[in-house]
Length: 228
Ligand SMILES: [Ca+2]
Image (tube, rainbow, N blue to C red; front, side, top):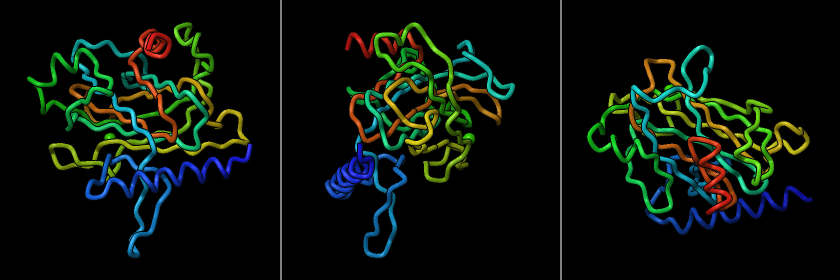
């Protein structure tokens, strides 16, 4: 496969999406591709975005540990090979979920009464060894930690005015089997290195393919992917 052609096509789509956006600047999560407009270099949006709204309560059991801290997971199904994947996490959630967004039950129950409970996000992206959509619920292990991020000034600041929200991008390395962004399940681990994880968050995944789905467990992701 000629990868450069695929990449150019995705770039073209992103340019079209950017131009059609007109006045709106779109999601804060942008791709690594940029375009010069009137001498100003601006990052282009991804062609497709998937949003997940969640809430971590004091009673929410952590799913693992990351460098000694309690960690929570989100799982994303990416239905085709992608040239790049971007992930952002903002806390507290600042926007309202739309019909196409994935919304955790706890978010629906607790966000409205606790709109300002937030945490300092830290995200880690792993590729899991789950390639077959029919076997998602059987589980798998991490093949490779791809990248991570603590703080990004590209995202809106938290209510305290601090740029502590997280944004990462990973570009596919087609020649490296563990860093090629193939169809499969990716895990977003999140934690905090300043305080505890408590409050609402909005996670966004950007790619050049439609059909990315996000869930808080592999069982739930399995259902979303296989039962629509
Ligand atoms: Ca942070």
